[in-house]
Image 1 (tube, rainbow, N blue to C red):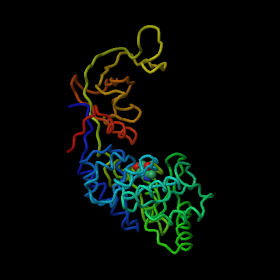
Image 2: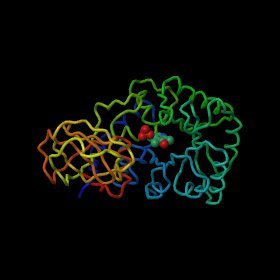
Image 3: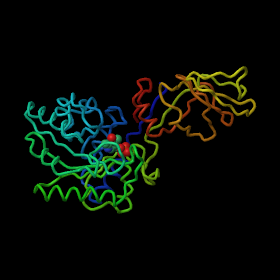
Image 4: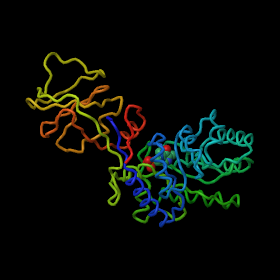
Length: 352
Ligand SMILES: *Cc1c(COP(=O)(O)O)cnc(C)c1O
């Protein structure tokens, strides 16, 4: 059945084990396995759970609800919406937060459910996505949080390289460790988790430059695609092809490389541009923008060129291949592509 995303669970287990072991050797004693790109795919999540992660972390509460039977602690990565506080307390042991009034809502829900909800307070060290701006950080906020009876301040964390593209450095993350010491000294408490970021912080672990005191990372892309995201390097001993997208050729014909007639706009209102390569062998593959944006996929066979796509058709130049009608084309996906194909109900998930 095509199109499908082929998920190699052995390779996923291997990547998870190698990365979690390496982190644990360097003092990163909790690793949030970030599952959000998997869109709740249970086989993949199960594989990660059994391969060394210590927490299941997802950005959607619907996914965490699906994982409710795992005894492993669950983390909500995206800041909670206030109107989902009940579900957050019910399905997540821990959530990342930056708004005191939301933490108050969580406290109210936790009180009603007779439980204690753990929070990691996010501090923005410059990337300008979530977190209290580091210059505005003050002990009043901490005091108000630790005075809540149904909230436990589990730790602090930061997120980098998501919006501003800021690359984590030892100096940047040392600021987080300084905040930790200030909080612990002021209130005479211990913060269990100091979360130094996502896959983009991994390079610091690998070159032994992670500041002492950072004891948690939240890893998604590193595990699923086997690459680090500060300098976009493949991680040498990991698999980059855990996920492969496969789609079928439904038309294969020799046609010109430039359309005939007056050129208006394509199906998406854009004016297309063509290079004349003469007559070429063109394949139409049953895969379209409704499945994945072609900018996020790459044919494994490097002699295939993507010419364009519409909602349901992907057009390839296959002149330099011996592909046939009905043949299968395999693509590598990047993070954005994986997110789309895992989310699309039209792309089947095949586990091997
Ligand atoms: C997505 C996300 C992560 C994981 O990012 P990767 O680059 O895939 O490792 C970590 N933390 C937060 C808050 C996220 O939203």
